[in-house]
Length: 400
Image 1 (spheres, rainbow, N blue to C red):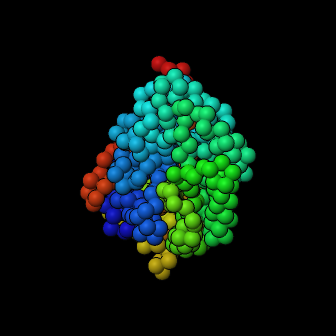
Image 2 (image 1 turned 30 degrees about the horizontal axis):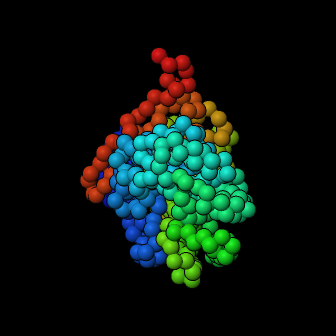
Image 3 (image 1 turned 90 degrees about the horizontal axis):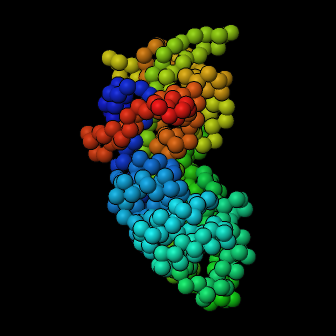
């Protein structure tokens, strides 16, 4: 949240808009590499922010792709197929057929269930190619398979002509703040790998693990990211595994790179409570852990002719405002009782740490509001419009 940079971009485009700094995401990847070592690979989970894919194609070792739509984005962005891990809890056979018939064994596939294992077998057999597969271990949710299912697949692997088990995949959640979680998960993985080696002579070439490193979204929260990254590096150093280790991350790499800018259109006081109405809203901004808008994310106030206004913490006078969006629902509250300085219509509010998920998780079709512009920035002055404002009414009514 560099003030000079915010001054440069805040008034430049029609609101609302997102701006993503790809250099920030690249820096996060380098930070992780510096902590865990160059031998550990970094996989970017593109569901966090697909607009970063092309710019991260050389920096990230691979990309987790969880849907046919995400895969088509990678195709258009020119991502090498060798860098794609095709994941997802739901895989339709016709989609896999298209991918296998066109790209074959260039990419890695994941199996989240015995049925997915069978679908991959069918598609590979029809195309006459042998493909590499990661078996996803469940962490106790709808994702992945029980260890018993994995053991059965491994025990029968000699019969598979078209499927090669490359390794194991485990992802158990996000925003982890207790190092003990890493210890327990690596112990679980170590136990499974020992069993597979002892009982079936199977030694995986690859282990893909999602550490779920935390992002500090709110002012009152501890910034646990550095501490947990150190704990992860320590745990990796103790983990006895001779194959390739891949860390799959999305939020931790992308969150810091994004800002969301919305303009204040109306001010009012209802029953003693100050409300400001912005042209954006909860359909554009999604903070993990934001409950009823009670927590305070980083917000900067910008005014034409004045630039970024001093924050209340700088000793200036302020009033508390509940920041609401443009949707006709009482739930469209971004922040309650946020201190702002002499707020006026036309002021713009810049929300920080919106680089992960906000652009994809919002209620984007509600009220048929337009989707915001997306600006991508690399370097100091290389700004590109990645998406213009997009009308959604055509999606909520019969096609013309």
